[in-house]
Length: 173
Image (tube, rainbow, N blue to C red; front, side):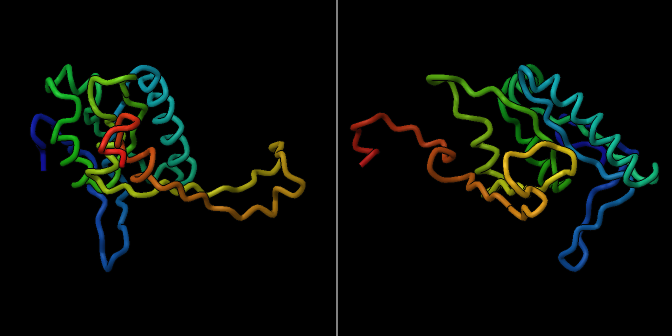
């Protein structure tokens, strides 16, 4: 695959695969990345550098990520004249993974949250966050080295569902 709608897929990497329900990660996986809006632009430049350095260190230079810019938010509006183009969904679905920076969410209206839309369309029902202690880092608990915690935050119901009905309306009932 060299094109995905208006996107040109990098040719120096490979898609993450599956064999017998197990992920198979090539030495140069192509990872779509949504830069994001506002501070997202700064955060994602640094995030890429941190991830690149971690992969370099972990694999002694034998592996590297091939970043693939896809669009959502202000960048998508400039390129596609829409906030969340189908090309972005197609790329994330095809390559199976993506990195996303913060996206614009209007206060008081305008358009629906792009984050909620991504969660719902891609069925990202949970945010899973393992917690572990790093020796030498101050912690507010007595024995942080004994921590063995995974936080699961539901992503598609309650406040994360993107349902915003006005108080007292029939929809609320």
